[in-house]
Image (cartoon, rainbow, N blue to C red; front, side):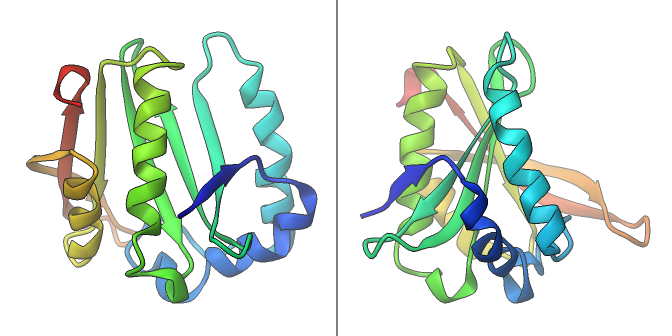
Length: 165
């Protein structure tokens, strides 16, 4: 249903579209400029050569081969990582995030050698929680994140252990 791929410089305009509008409403991010998108793409190859590798990121392609999202795996400790994803708003509700998350979980527990994954979402974005549940995560509570105004926002926290996959 979806394919994960490395980003290339030609993907910068699509990346700015992904990081805009409703897609970033419930993230800590801001809209990306074209220059910021190019920089995000330029930094990925350097991260791929780190030892131990701390971050993986992939573009999410739909059936037509269009870049509709981005998904990342970050190593937080030697054995624990986090997954995050963002999709273009016109791609919501088609199962793309679930399929991409399942692929990244496999990488996390094999290639990356992690034994625990965590992910969280804004409390006003329950659809993201449904994605995580479908991918095998369990809701474990909340974790405060601070918004632009400094106020604490209780993000919903999910986890998955390697032996539960």
